[in-house]
Length: 266
Image (cartoon, rainbow, N blue to C red; front, top):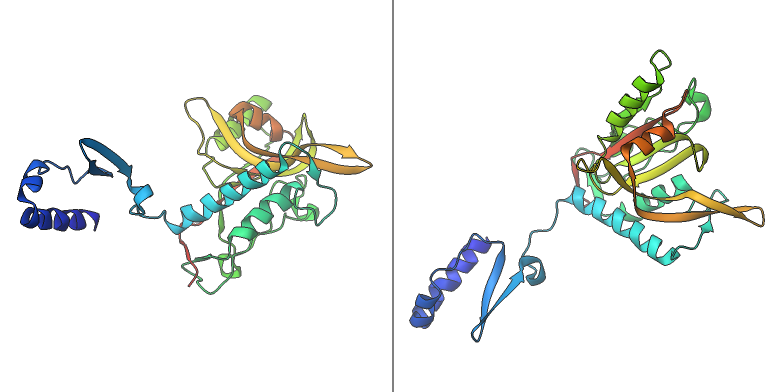
């Protein structure tokens, strides 16, 4: 479409200003920017600044909005711990990721179920996690029920294998992380023991073997007997550090990924 518009503009210039058209006949219409003339100076404007770039696909737009809202809450917190003690506090770890999802979901649906509002499942109850500990997975909800997530990868500690073998599997699991994945973990590490939730904000960095994520309440403190959690954005740790978080007996983790058929709500 853009190429046709530029070709039409060039044709009109040829009729009206033949000299100018002849001077600029070497324009490259394949480049992803628009070149204009301001006197003798060439000014390059990205297509995005001109409103000519195509918007991202709905699925990517959904992910972009979730991550941007996470950034906004991180900046608003300004490094100060936020209350993460009561069931309604959005800065509790799973509450935080759920809040981001719900705040951004209204404009989106699944192509297979365009009339169904999107949901994010609750954590699987402890009794249903056995023999593993609570926190490594969500309830199983179908797409027909509104669940737009699929299990992209999972890790469960296998006691029939050695610790070294389990660590290798846990690292391989982490290397499957992609931007927009919701990350559910049963932890035993430096910050505590129990369930945690996070959102991956960039594909696994293969060059540095690192993971970029955002979350709330991984780190925190007690104030007058109440828990307060730190909001994190673009935190970075290597794959081995993450694997050691959940590579313990009866623990594990799951990566949940949005389906490919995300569309805009009608």
